Image (tube, rainbow, N blue to C red):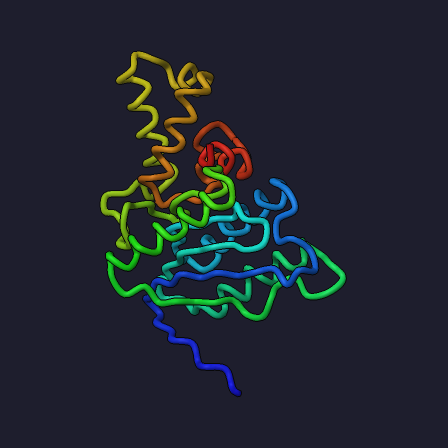
Length: 217
């Protein structure tokens, strides 16, 4: 029986799941999960898509809610699965069949899918930083991009400098206070279009992986 054609919309939002074939767990440990999260960020930067939710807590399956933002879902998912398959080498096929995608048509459906992901998370053992909301250039609480975002390194640098002044601190002292710095990094991530690399540059040359770990805490 031929496969049913996927419903695709170049500006659609989809709930995507991908399961392990049983050759090896998709995620053997937290190092695998961190690699997958970093891969999602690279995918966002490459395709300019937006990931509204993801969960890599379960060993055998991952969940993604993705707004393709003018892109092609098949190309995006092929990029993710090929890259992760090259990383997580096993003797046979890593993935069980093709990924499963479901178009999300409205906010109510989006909320229901997010609730489903949270329920799956609870069943797999509870909250983890490897199940978190929103990886995209302009993080908001819904599908639409935010307005008045920090859209350049200079604008973001000026913003954190103003935060330091408002707190009677020099920029150097602010960045040395890791708690304040990390909170500010999370705030910038929520309200900017900068990549992880650019955010790291603004905050004194931190690596992309360091920024990703701070955001995931």
